[in-house]
Amino acid sequence: MDASDGTAMDRQRQAPAVEGRSLLDWLRVLRDGWPALVLLVILGLGAGLIATALQSTKYQSKATIVAGSSKGFLDPSSAQGLAPVAATVTRLAGSAAVLQGAGVRYAAASPNPAVRAQRASRATLKWLGKNLRATQVADSGIVTIAGTGPTQSDARALTRAAVRSLERSIGTGPGSNAPAGPGRRQTTAPAGGLIVRDFSTTDQGKVSPTPARNLLLGGNVGLVLGIVAGLSLGAARRRVRRPDEIATELGIPVLGSLRVGRLGSGLDPGLSAARARLQRLGQRDQGTIFLLTGTVRPERTAELGEALARAFAASSRTVLVDADLASRSASRRLQLEGVPGLGELLDGQVTTGPEMFRAENISVTTVNGADGGATIEVLPAGHAPSDAAAALGGTGLVKSLQQLRLRYDFVLVVGPGLDRPAEVIPLISAADWSVLITPRGERARTIESAHGLTDALAGRVAGALLVNRR
Image (cartoon, rainbow, N blue to C red; front, top):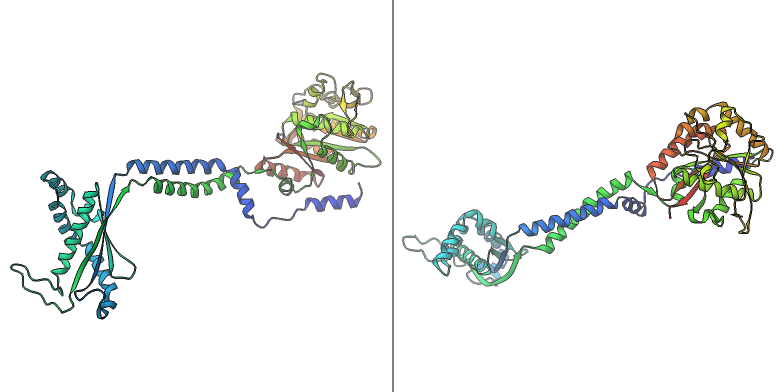
């Protein structure tokens, strides 16, 4: 490989750093954390249902009143003072005196003694303060008093009692025009005294329980918490699916995207593209050694190694080496398990020359789609050593691969996965290029750990092959 090719590969590996994530990136992260999002939304809706079940049945009535001058609330001379007066009336409606008076009138309006006793026991100061609300309408002189009770008639009676109690408190206070009662001294009352006009009392119907409101609140709370939890979970278990994302994560180019179902036929366009790109990395004066490793299962690496070997063999002298001494997936796939091979070479029991084994009569489909009895040359894994990492770390590996390099244009080495670094690192050192095989949708953490191991490759990573899970 000349210097220009190396420079081009370096430029491909040096992907620009991502300064920040876009909205689409965050949505992809959230997609990987969707179980947390769904769970918390369901819990929020469940909390809304529980709150609905615990809510008591309540009805409400409202009275609209106007506080103003005894001359009339439309009198121009008192129009400017309506809003402050209404604010005072609103605060007065929540006073203990008004609430106690409302309780007395509420019980007195009972249709029979039994209801009267029930209302009298219920109308404590705390209960009245909770079930009576006075609200000023904007900055006007209009005040709304809302009463809530267990039945509509109770709510109506409580609202009217509150209005009458408020009227009496205002009418008998300083500055009112109300006559003094028995034993009461007449207070000073200006001509424009303060009065309260009861415009109307309307029934609002059932206001509790509120299932729609509770479900909406619970669902919204669950959604907010679910988004936060989903982003956290998605960041922890984020999967990388797009080729450009994988290339950015690994810092290397993507050689091709392959479909598992098409590898056996050799018709996958991604396989042809990967073969062409790898062949351009070949050396002119001697063979080139490619190590196949990654984050997929050993069986998948063996399948891909066989497919690549058949593609290479159509135009170049190629040998497939099963260097996964523990799994021996490629040897089993080609029905060469138990046949002497690399294990014996590493032990020094045999030499490469006469002991290369040929997988005969395997019907394959060539790259151009023509069926034929093409063969691929294979060096099986051979016997399994007691310590595969020690066997691969000896001098026999480099010696054996160098001899194969002199006889073949391309040497494809099916190695163990990156989860077995003690076995992979010796193979990395002996190979010219490493090809990382990873599935679409691989977890980002796995890719990051693979990227950390490939730092030891000193720039000798040809690229990544993506394998679709389906």
